[in-house]
Image 1 (cartoon, one colour):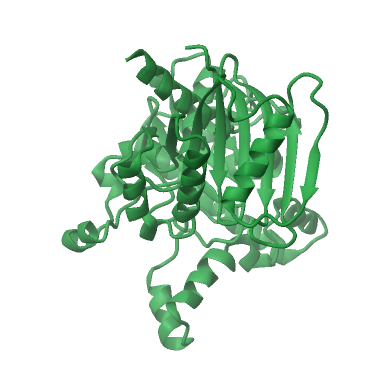
Image 2 (cartoon, rainbow, N blue to C red):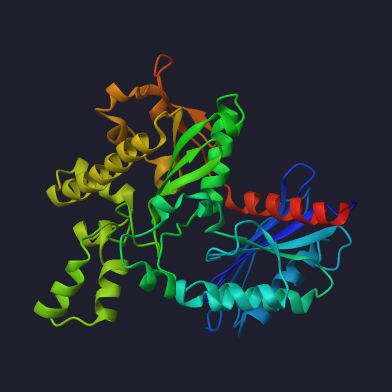
Length: 406
């Protein structure tokens, strides 16, 4: 198969992120972002990374819709000799947030697949519609090219029913598709595999607790390369304390707010998803600013940090129990990769579980995957930069290559 390039598209409600990769070595050829689609101040930022193609280019002009956005992306790529009509383009890989139970692995997109993704919109009303729009637009531009959906939920479909089921009436749950699906799956898959590589072992021989800590945050228990539990549930609201989301909360809080505060379901939805978590506790959702405030003696910021760490430790302990044996804990995403105090606080006091940080290694900054635990620690602590776009490209390319050979 001569075509080795994959274009990865992540379509949001008013944005499109993209990367073009060459799968012969995973090199990025171009990256970019279109934002504020549909507004007067739409913006496209394109950065070619191939040879002497030049530096970042930016254009600010109205971009009416996703169709116009992708056409603008195609123009930028063509200007670098990387156009969508290139015979070296093997496929387009699309990030799709929710795949329900049907989509357990990357899937070549046809009308039947699109219809099923559309049926799942009630489970991801903010994300799946935008993903569908991006897919339809890309298919219109290159109807002859394989287009592949890579689902955020797919990695977590290996969870046993004991972890995936909520303890509510089964008939009601099945009728309304209520269960724990989990998210950030491409990140958890990538980081679990890279952690095994860092340890010099095969993924099937390693048990890992992955902590994806960004503005959205999730944990997963990965046994031999397969997810057996994850912190997010029916929606991305469940689990860890996040930038603006509450994470785990007594469901009766909702009823209490409806009765006592007269809040509507929409009001409570906004409260728990956009006005809670770190921002609800201290007014900031940027961990760097929270740490600055702590260093200045801000008690509210300190409490927010302590609550964040307390929840994180609870999940580390819970997933240690679920796995039975843990070979490594891997920190990833913006906070996990860059906030040394978060890693230090999360592991502190867990020496009896075999965890011990090397303070010097933990404080070092690096763009690469690395171990920050002491040599004698029974459980490795790793910092593994996530790469969801590369993971999507790998899964896409593997599928179209397999189909071409088959």
